[in-house]
Length: 115
Image (cartoon, rainbow, N blue to C red; front, side, top):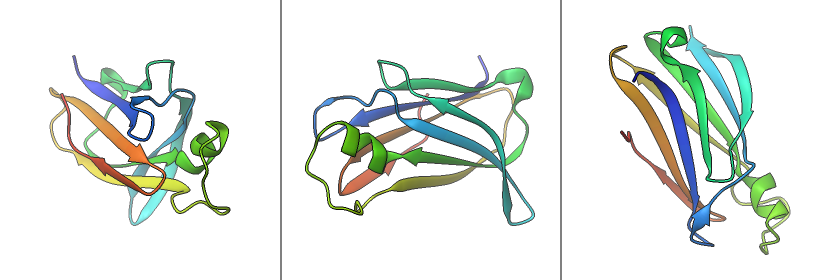
């Protein structure tokens, strides 16, 4: 199964981050061109690009984390320390699935290439 997916886990609550806005862009020539906008489901997941639509090259994911934590009722600064988390990465093999998880709290995040 090829394609691009994400999964966001809220480390502050220990739960999936539901209803987070995620923007997907294609990076070309130093610029990012928006492909589509999504929202994570109740399990914090989103299927972003189907396998046949995924191409080689650079991509950008933008996660509206500041809005998520404000909506979750957590005490965050205004403006929040983390507002939009941006992850730039590259797809180098179209026969593989590309999964980009995000582990996030109001003051930090980590990501990795998942499976």
